[in-house]
Amino acid sequence: MTHLTPAPESVLPSGDTRRARRAATRRTRATLAGAAVAASVALGATLLTGFASTMPASAAEPADISITPAMAVQFSATSPTLAAAAAGAQTLTDITDAAESALAQGQGALDAAEVVVGEVAASDLELEGSTRVDTSSLRAALDELAGSDVLPLLLLPDLTQAVTDAAADVTAKASALSDRLDAAEKKAAEEAAEARRKAEEEAKRQAAEAAAAAAAAANTPAGAQATAQQMSAEKYGWGAGQFSCLVSLWQKESGWNYQAYNSSSGATGIPQSLPGSKMASAGADWQTNATTQIAWGLDYISRAYGTPCAAWGHSQAVNWY
Image 1 (cartoon, rainbow, N blue to C red):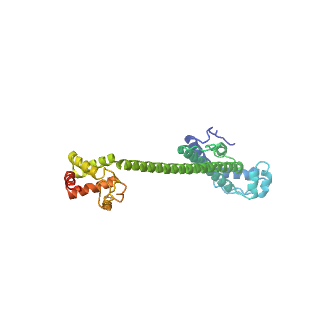
Image 2: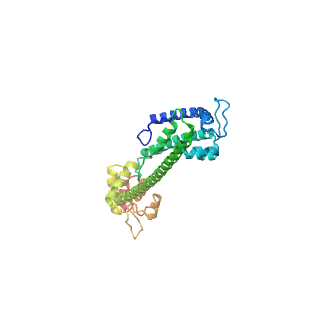
Image 3: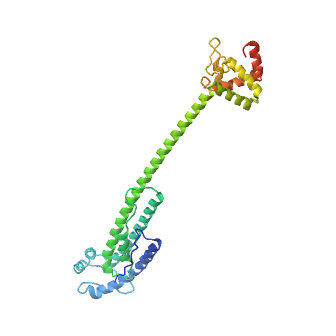
């Protein structure tokens, strides 16, 4: 008689249930060889009366009795699968090997389904449709095949086929769920990449706007004076007195206008560089950037006069510097 182990109610088995099933599977595999011996004796003594059969030489040795096509006629009424096996002249060893393979296949399908369901849960992605794999039919088939201490071998072909079919179904469902997860992960990655790209573009846009605003502010007379005061103090150590002279000097020369141009002499910019192209040594943007003009002008004053007040005194004396 076949002893059935009740299947858990959850879609995927718990750890304790899986361990119990594996233990039962190992017990079943260990008894299959012994069951094959017992079945071969029974076949020779009773079921196969009137057919050509050979008893095993020793009941301690595994049986390898062929189920002949003639036996299929007697078995077909109770087991179509066994009749098909008989038509192919399978041995009892073939049948037990197939059962062991089905047990491994079924457990592997359960394990694979559990992995996929766990990956879906861990991904935190929203997948359309169900994110579960129904393994109830497979677990029931496995319980029936692996849950007995002694299983009549004549039932094995049908039970083996049931496990094989159910395992294939679970494998297909798990594979489909895995494909959906892959598609969802790919979509999420693409959306994240697009979000990063947009964020980077926005950051660049804001930085450009900030730079433009800063440049525009620095190009005003007030902004230019603030820049000059900071640069003269940090780079040359000139204090408020020297800066006062600088303010007066460049107010007279250009009104602190970076676009100032003397049409008579060609003097250009806030420091009235002559010619204006000299300021290129401080930066290629000398025509549009007050800060570049100021950097050149302070360097010129330092080299030519030492301090802004000396330059201012010279300008007051001769009307140029």
